[in-house]
Image (cartoon, rainbow, N blue to C red; front, side, top):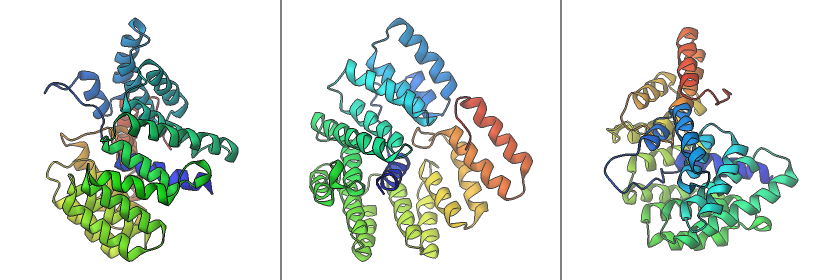
Length: 317
């Protein structure tokens, strides 16, 4: 039961997490750009060179952790994220990424190991919030953990409600989304739907909020409304950002309109809004699966080749 909960929690976080790199200038660091563009091999090559000269570079360790996280190499991600925390234990984002890496690992191990890791997940998210009480992504992660994890490992809906109250003063849209998740967990689906809708108007990224609503409708089997919400989200995302990937995934899970899902994934890959939230190589793989299902074997193979060229360490599912 715990593993299923953690798989849902951290799958949700992977789709909804925001990029945490805060640049001090308007020029994006080349390695960060490689990370956002899903060029994992290039990023790792450059990070390895940085760390060869300074093995304790916390920033580089955190970045390499995030590349391995993109590639779903959880053990390597954990190792680097732990090293980043040791090098700079006061950085909220470093604790957040360590918690995320622990969480992904926890959803894929034996039950006993999952309990141990789950406690670490909650502890790291709590530390991230303690280090920066206004870190929205850390608050969201802690709230999601509390919704999905039992009190035995530090979660619980009462804790999640406290986090939602804390989020109110930082990001009203995120607070409403967490309120919706709490209501959904309590099977109060009417309240959850209202909160998801209210979050759209308060969200800093309304396209993503529409996709979150679409995900709710998908979980409830309300597929016409799911499709309508996804299309609405896509229509207000002129930059063709990661929300399109969320929408395409929602359509694919429901086996609805695969051609639109394919179109959205292509538009995202051709956009200037590539993000570590939706690694390009992973999107190529998802696109390959959709093309294969449509009988386009050649197109699928081309997408897989492009994914491998970007991230040779990514094991294709």
